[in-house]
Length: 243
Image (cartoon, rainbow, N blue to C red; front, side, top):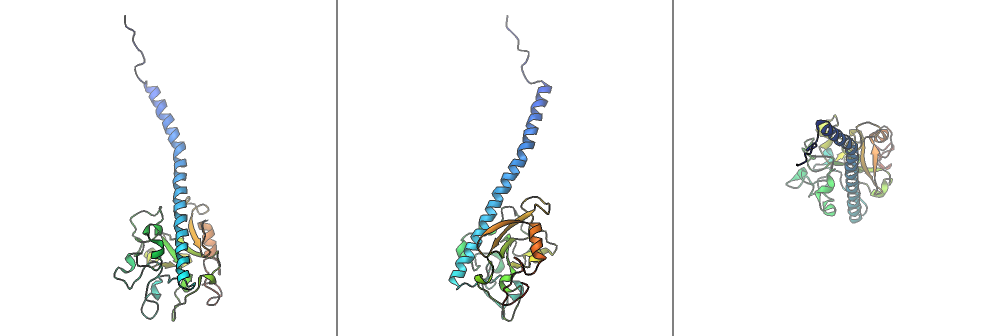
């Protein structure tokens, strides 16, 4: 006489228990996976900034220490400065639609360095958003001063002064933040990295000394509100308060 297995499959209760265990495990794992993803993106962004500064150093080595033009829109015209800036060259047919004609591109060799991994398409915040997530400090050319446009040597900046930062895609000024290659400090920094809370949200910045660092929005804003500071850092030969 053949025996009969009374437990041919899962009961409803057993199935619900298994589903519950899986849900708990997912709840525990997802924050860990998100942290890993954030750390990887932050590391990539940090690497991008270091390579940007390496390209700046190579450029200044070729130009007797002088920094490249910052692509400040109002200075970017005949009679002011009309040529290749760090990001693009308006005198070329493709103008500000490609970084390949920029003054430092031959040292970068790839456009990937200009894109934060947490800045996905569509890149529609302004004319240069399709080619970069980063902007250079307008202090490089005196925040729009003209007649003549001031150019500085990299040694005129403190090594801790900030050269590049990740632009704030939600800045209230809209397309102005991505209208050229440079920015005022008050135009803000992204909150893509970390949480959205002020004390823990932040982004990567890179400094004239060549290093890159992560900073909170709160720290960044404290530099915006102080002159001179790591952001308001026009050399003293031109400005007493860094602006």
